[in-house]
Image (cartoon, rainbow, N blue to C red; front, side, top):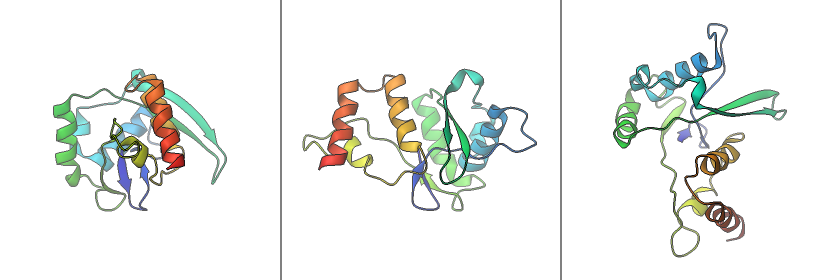
Length: 151
């Protein structure tokens, strides 16, 4: 995920332009602008599609959620090269790794992360991704959500 210019956390992305013939073209263009030149080789395809959601507030939008499995070396390269992206320092303040654990205190880690201010439906997309990609068990996700709302 990334820290945006407005202090909220979200996923890379943006609007599909008239020049984009497919959703994936628009997303790949946005990834290149926001995360840098490594996305010339790490293209998102229709196989990476996960879900769509209609939103009416604050404006009518259809958001599409894609996930792409990356190797650790690719993640590290994105983090290293991201500072050279066109939108770094403008739209994107930096990348953020999501903690996939909960500390013994029951709050540190994922529960604390979920207390951040997320843009749009990014928080629900994150939880959807954790579930569908089976990065955490359902009970771990539920416990983290509960702790984020009750501690």
